[in-house]
Image (cartoon, rainbow over all chains, first blue to last red; front, side):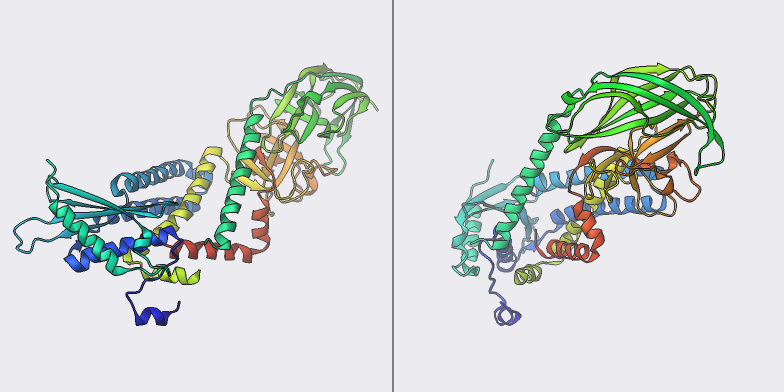
Length: 193
Length: 176
Length: 178
């Protein structure tokens, strides 16, 4: 496919349907798109921003070690290098912990603003994964109030074949339908006491 | 379904990981092997001369001349992770100038499959026994030891000293 | 395949792109920090070297890899395989110690020889130099891994391969979304 095609129809997204990563990314983007455009949510980037911050720190530590070792050749730089190496690998561990325990596959955090401006924002978290070899797309949506007392959650699992046609083109309307249904279901759920 | 590239990629990755695992297993399998064996050495003729070391410096140094017998059986050292042995005989002594002198007098490379039962009679040294100064004449305590460096297929490169050594003294007169 | 890359890139936002760049940076810095960690651990400036010549055959061939340590407190002894640098030569040499003299204050001088050479290394040293000192030593060979170093040798001899591989890797990581 070339540029022309994507220019004529910007909404058409066609991917290699055997590439799990591409499938997941495309679906995630589509889900987020629905939340933001249809329901006027505001995306909250703090979760990804913290990850970027930790990554930047790791790269800076490595850069500092490289620079220090360049100006104070090895036997002299031994202590600084030891500290930097330890710090770097601790940071790497922190990134792994952060992505597994804090992000947990969450690809979008969006805020639902109360139009009257009276109630605080409601937080929506969407996370997903694709089970390999089964082609099932597991999508979880969590709705939290600002205090974190009212937490409602719903998960659906549907084959990726539902969302794409044979050519590998994303069916935007199907995603929109699913998200709408899920949102309604979450809203109907009872408060978990 | 999957492209040729991704198939090739996974085949290559799998092959590599199997190779790495096997190599590592080979390294681990011989990490604790005790490579010590015994040796017997004997010196026959012992002489010391006082000459300039030609081509190196004009300084006059002591040059030892010895012939020796050596017996050792290194066959037991070979296992599946030994590619080669580097066997060498060292003379170790103390002089007024140096607290420790080590001079390799003879060495031999034994590849796997070659005869590793050494029975050497009346051997001349392979390298000159030059001292760093004039510390050989009348030196009462020169020790010959046999060591070997094990070259594996993969893994550590241990240097092992054979059990047994031979101590001799140099005559107190230079040979002309 | 390249279309796929462009497609990925098109659907990335600012943060995703920044994350891609950081991921690329982290791949490079991880390699760098592993190397620096090995340096600290082994005490040697170059903890892993590839054998470049056949002077230690049949023990080491061109393209084999040696792991080095350079601990100050460990005494240097005859028979050890050392890697040393000579003034005026860029490439370090891997040879075995043939003779060693140690003064009572601990200073050493030693002479080396390649297993496959018939004479000692005095001809290789700087003109007039007869002995090596501890400062010339880069490290001592402690571990051996065959063949793997051929990759480094190829890359050094044909720098184009090196740049091509690096460019491909960089593009892959930068453009392909995690």
